[in-house]
Image (tube, rainbow over all chains, first blue to last red):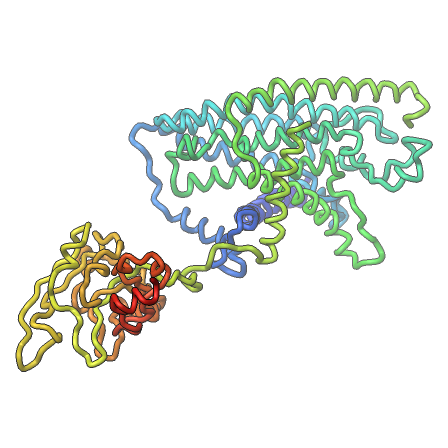
Length: 371
Length: 212
């Protein structure tokens, strides 16, 4: 590893950072616009065409606003919390492979912040870290509403992380069934690679049909996907699971006492987390950047960019689903939230894990109807 | 799976409305202030003090509006008309006329109380001020000019819509239809500030012959 490699690493990190900031600006605008459409409103329409610059205007305003620090705060934790929210959010997205990697000047440059061989574990760890931000923000504000929001965040994160992790485990185990693979893998880049191609050759008598279906894990792992998606909505504290910042009860929840750029950081983290969760769902279940690149038919640079476009398309379908859910469903009651987490999702994900294990086990013994 | 059916119903509502909204359909909000909603004819906006077509003020300074006002926001002081330069056809005219718009509840009782239809309401609703004293509208703001135009407190405001001051509320005359229920639906209101434009109310004999 020489300085050129280091330069590439730095470029990747900066690139992902810039991409996330830009996409967050777009996402906030997109959410406001979509929810407005669903509520017979217009949404932001003043700043720029279709109001697309509204988020930038809001960001600039927040950046220059006074940062009010209440007297009773625990200053260290209070100042730390916004960073603790943003940094894990960025780190999670660093794990998402954006494309198959480019060959630049004889060097292989993966289009990914970092290709860890424990990527999925890292994602789970970082999404747990993000909870500390909410807890610390709630506790250090020295005020009752943030505290209640922080307490709710802890309980909610613990409840849904288990289901989410178990849903991911099913995918990891299933990735061992890929042709030529011996073990499952925790590396997201590897999981995406294993989803290339079609299901051809898996179910012998259905080959003409399954040979046309892309080898996305959502088809065999649809239950895992539903569980993962529900848990992702809860994990990012989005409606209908937004008890952490339930406006009607808790003012703003954990960020009640934050203003200016510190508040903006919580906001940024929330939207990065939405995008990350959707990108991870697209990566684990929808083949990530896999898609036709039409090499030789379209110009070379188009083929190089297309994987990123496919990933973004898949992610954004899920992002819009997040917004749609927010516009449709009312907030859950607290006991309903806990019931759904502990009595429905966790048993369902465990059951699904057992079923997956049994089926994958059968496959090892070469039963006639599975591969 | 009843809950799934309920989910489907809910998502169908937001989805179909969202799709229609995407193409700009069924939008119920308007882009105020560049796009104004049409106001109902009888909208209660800011008051105006009317004049007769010959330029005489209708207000005779009787203070009945001030007496009728439930918010006590009107202050009137009448004065005798100068004999050589009368302001109104009567003996007296509204020498001081003030309405505190911060207290006004826009009930329109002043309009009903006025015996000469001197005070009516317009469609102007933008009356924000940066100073409490500015919220007290005096003769200067309320009295229409001799050509029938009504002063605006911020005429230079780019968003000021002066036409709102020309559209008077369709003020329903408060006179009861003399005990004849059939007269109820007959609106006798004027659509613009200024002199009464409707035919005079028929007398009792005409009315009895019409409605039995």
